[in-house]
Length: 339
Image (cartoon, rainbow, N blue to C red; front, side):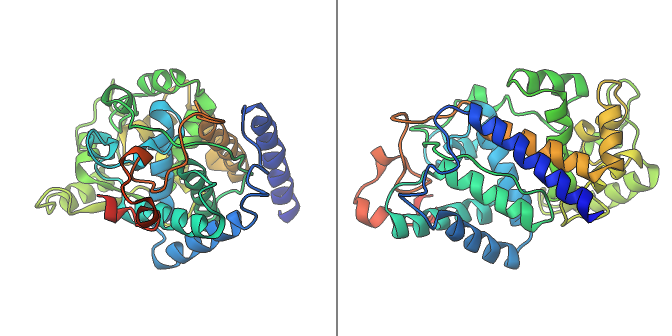
């Protein structure tokens, strides 16, 4: 078992290295000279946050996905102020604990190394490290991203796939971003930990054979009873994975087989002919899931990047440099201070 796990990690590392080499402007050693302690600093701060709240791991993965999918991994989702992505529907429930962690890491890295590392790079590194702490696969991260000067437009933000999407809608949404079926099925596996609000899965209570896959009746009854107490709305949380809600593993796919997928977009993966074979395979083989998830995370984190002289390296992850007043003070402010 141990030898198979080690072999799987070698495959993941080799696959990720191949993708890295294709990402123009990125390099695993990009900050080796300018910030040799970068990964140690990030790892320390992530570990401290995870020790206090394991929910920071799924919160970071969600931030990364919501950053990368609309217009690329450029830390635009971290920006606050007018037209902020955080003020738009898909991002209203991004967790402040994770947003603040990224800014805390930025401040620590810039104190140690100067303003050499972007918030975009820090977001990818922090997400990777939190994933490993939660039990997920390690993968190498190529660096050299730069930060966006402005938020993504509302039209781009609303290209994020919704929990109510059917599998054909998901395949088109991912395909429009050059992500394929394997990316869809594996990245959906990030729902193996984390929480959701009742409003995001209320459509599961009225299954329709054509648009809404069946839900286990006992599971549905428990969810209905729980959500009946959701007053005011948004005060009740439900774990996405009912088996191991705080661990990154393949139990999410077990949930789907048992008709206990919380979102319609999740449950559809196990019954739709285009995705059922891969989802079933991941339920039987955690190593296969981990290998594909790592590849897909690398692929996603390398989409539509700003590199070289494009964009900027922010003084504060929540504020474009053009808005910073009193740079020396702003460089030590936290994310919350800019909100």
